[in-house]
Length: 70
Image (tube, rainbow, N blue to C red; front, top):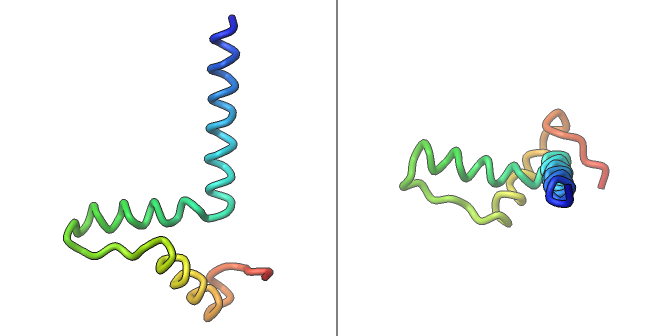
């Protein structure tokens, strides 16, 4: 019984973590790096900072790319 509750709590926490990463866009870098490595393993992969800077610049240059409130 106790182990079932622990499994359920863990599964719920993992679901909340996944949802929050998708909601905030944090998982976008992970998807991007997986895509780059799958299609061209020799291609340079930007750091997370470089990726986020490029993504922010792209959103700022075209408002249709995504809404930014701040």
